[in-house]
Image (cartoon, rainbow, N blue to C red; front, side, top):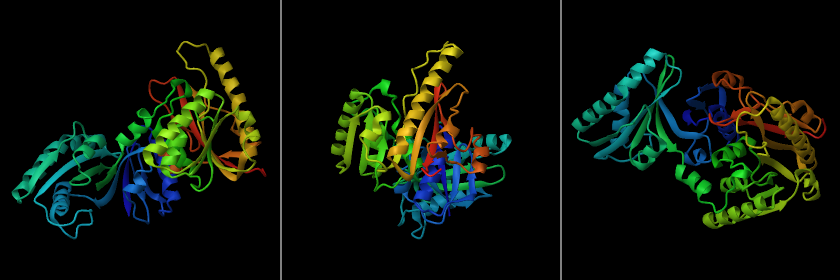
Length: 417
């Protein structure tokens, strides 16, 4: 069976997270028959997926079950919408005949030829209105929710209850094939917003790691939830909060800043109270090089961290200044992985962020192998090509207005190298 995932702003990282989550769920994911594009990934799996699986993700906007490769989209959609309203044997999640139906259509370009994509774009709204007319002629009370552009937002789908009480169908336009998929779940935008802006303490100087990215990094790590996960640069505690929300129950945080630890503790206490969680949690002040003095050797299974990425750049800095900051940071990261090698279990994993200054990427990966850390590929080769990724190991997360980007890696620790 196949599921379509509408990807977020950074499709390479969203895809890497999705692949890691599918493998962790033992879903029988087949990369060879899956389809990778910057807009949508169609995943071929052996096991059925549900909304609970989707809501563990941070980087996907919608999940839909692929129901048909279509040659006659209008006729196929009319049948599918009729089934959603009244067929008691419909596999689409609704049971029993109904007299009303709210529906919406969304178009996603998966590599269609430009002329074909333009045709679909012009056709989308008239198609929605024609389907509404034909369904009303069949005796249904119908409301078509129209997108401002080519696709409904997750907010529109949620607020109009198209998943729970209606139907959204995705039209996925490939170079030669068009797929139809019915939406199962959309991103819980209010939930992320609450954990981002509703928590009591935040500090822009601590990096302000977005909760969605923190969740993506945790899912990419795919560490065992029954073992210890650590953030060694915990800042305001975003990684730890997201890990607790995902079900991790043994969490450790550290930071050089006393204020950061105070913020982390306050934010974690707020989350535990809000969600009624039971978690073993510890946070303490420490320079990263001194972690072995606080943490038992070989006791940590997973580390997920965004370290200090250098001072904010205002623009106009000389190449010499940027290079000096770069060298300072590389020294910090060497000390960091030396400390990690003393507290991680053999086979443990680290998901770590390095800075990207313009086009300048980290160049100490070979040195980190001396500490027992090897960077792992996060994407299959076909996905690297399709998504125009920098590589299969370091995946870049950078807003257009950012001067310093994030380069996300996953390392496996093998102390016997």
